[in-house]
Image 1 (tube, rainbow, N blue to C red):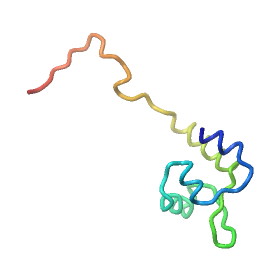
Image 2 (tube, rainbow, N blue to C red; image 1 turned 30 degrees about the vertical axis):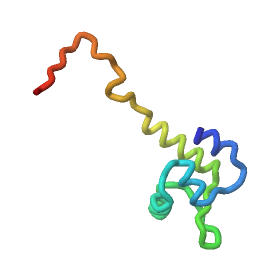
Image 3 (spheres, helix red, strand yellow; image 1 turned 180 degrees about the horizontal axis):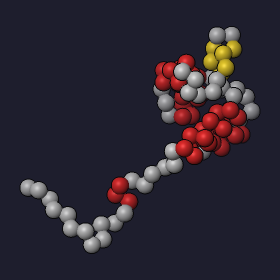
Image 4 (tube, rainbow, N blue to C red; image 1 turned 90 degrees about the horizontal axis):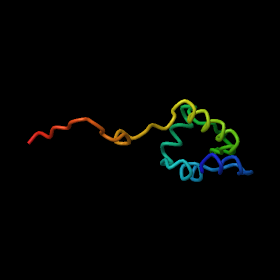
Length: 85
């Protein structure tokens, strides 16, 4: 959903929109921008984000960190579990 939103967006995004879309706090997005961890530009002193650059950045991060299965996703077939009392 995030990637689709970024790929279809035609106008630049502000800090609030990016933070909301990514599920991050605005202060974290500010820190990421200040340390060049997220692509952005300054326009008249305000941070702006190009959705196509964000989409490429997001895809790159997804490729680098594929989602993991939760530890309880595999059944406990044939394993004995002891519960300490």
